[in-house]
Image 1 (spheres, rainbow, N blue to C red):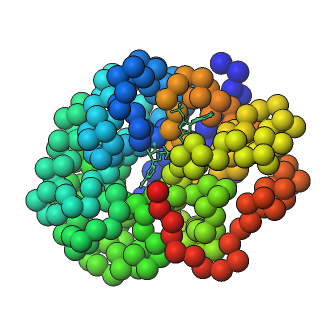
Image 2: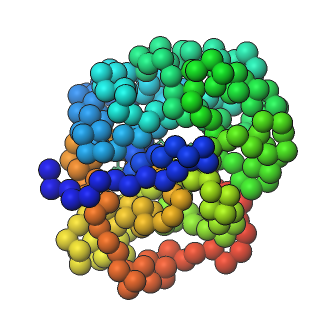
Image 3: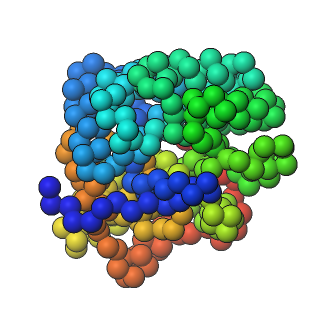
Length: 283
Ligand code: NAP
């Protein structure tokens, strides 16, 4: 292994540290021919310190959770396991049912973080109540939300128990910078880490010419530039999904890449920051 430094962490509001570089799993367990590679990728990522694993009951209809269970059950204590409940399941009685099903697939007895995948029709009061009970039962250690804009967060914090959320997982990459206007600064002020999903825009931005140009100068891949840009920011953790050991190695190496002021200026010209409020974008 050639990587030099350990992956640093950011603290949740409760004080627990989470690594700023983890692994996503959306799209895994959908093609049996890729299974061995996906398992090898996840295990290698953990070897390399990318111990935060993000999944959801939605991914491959529970298949991604099953794949994680198969890949990593023997390494459970090394992981920070993040899972998500679907909005229509996030009722007072549906949430524990979903959670217990997810735990069985993951072959574990607890989640480190349980997120509401996005805001749906179920009143937030019910979901918070269900999350709180799951904490009391020791089935989840922390809870949070995903795809919540500022207005959603303020609704959440007005509900009894609602201020106990520990992260907001949102879309954030060079092509989706809207949160820099308000959501990200407000979360920083509150000491709340953002979990940035789709750092490669689901793979679609990797061939961008500006990324290629900067990558060539540093002798790295364009993906490394995109990821290093997300990783350099305070209070942001990110969860790239890589289905091959080679991609995992590249993503881990991106942690070592230091973008220069000039690189950042070039990136700002190609991918301008927001000049006003924008609704939160989602994938
Ligand atoms: P992403 O991480 O932006 O991109 C994944 C794509 O990039 C895959 O096609 C992958 O290919 C490719 N890739 C990975 N590393 C690469 C590298 N070094 N070089 C070239 N290509 C590379 O997309 P994402 O899966 O949408 O987002 C990441 C994770 O965030 C998800 O897996 C999921 O856990 C989470 N997420 C959450 C939400 C939410 O609503 N909360 C929404 C979207 C995503 P290979 O598979 O071939 O490696």
